[in-house]
Length: 255
Ligand SMILES: NC(=O)c1ccc[n+]([C@@H]2O[C@H](COP(=O)([O-])OP(=O)(O)OC[C@H]3O[C@@H](n4cnc5c(N)ncnc54)[C@H](OP(=O)(O)O)[C@@H]3O)[C@@H](O)[C@H]2O)c1
Image 1 (tube, rainbow, N blue to C red):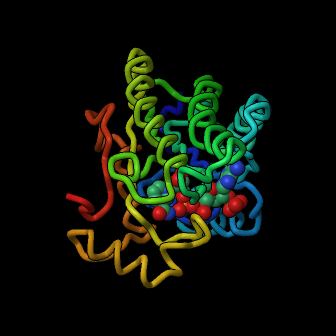
Image 2: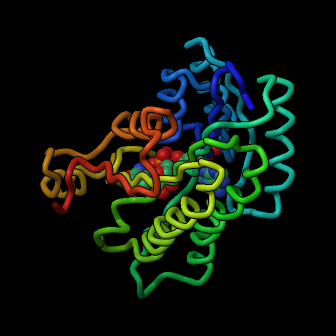
Image 3: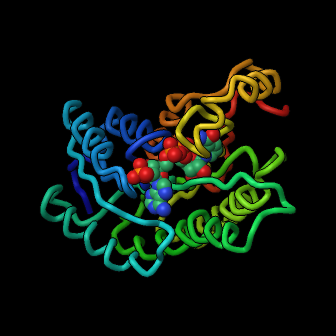
């Protein structure tokens, strides 16, 4: 669909943290990029400017992944931006990254907290992807973002990690059913990364950082630039035979 034009990636939650690094690394690999933000428009604008300064086109759209009733109008917005700004009809890569966490003991987690996690981490990768299929080019790539917490346990993350387990299962089914369009689907599971995520617990607690570092073979926690390049690789043709895989990017934790 895009002919000789640049490939285009859509990264949800690209205004900061891991999504920002993914967007920048995709731009370095030659992608034009659409990012979404939830509330931090200024941060998103700065990412767009940074991508433009690297010679690639970029655009930011507002999206609340917790509200699936908005997905149809979001897809229409994507289609319209593709036409007006990118001169294209489709995207080549989708990264389902946006999200917040809940940190609460299993015994205290409420149905409301659980439902919020379902909407953000399961319903969105499921139905946003389903709706966006009309603008994803055949031969494209989808990357879902899970967490190391889906493989190992760490106190306080039962609801959040349950959702990430679901995303890993979903990835296999998406890969199976989208294979006929040659769309690859993989899942990246980051370890603990220093971002704003979860009230910036990893970044702000020296004690937690020390514990996590001691559990990790490479002896530290992660930073966003540990993740973006792996996602960009999975969106690119260099990974054209990598499909339905879970890649943990965590420095070797709980090996
Ligand atoms: N950091 C970690 O240790 C870690 C580890 C494993 C997996 N992950 C996963 O990695 C992904 C990104 O996390 P992060 O660490 O980069 O978090 P972050 O720094 O807090 O950034 C979160 C991003 O998601 C967006 N967002 C939040 N709620 C949203 C909503 N309801 N609708 C749409 N967008 C929303 C934010 O937009 P605004 O800027 O507009 O608020 C922001 O762009 C998440 O799926 C998370 O579960 C993180």
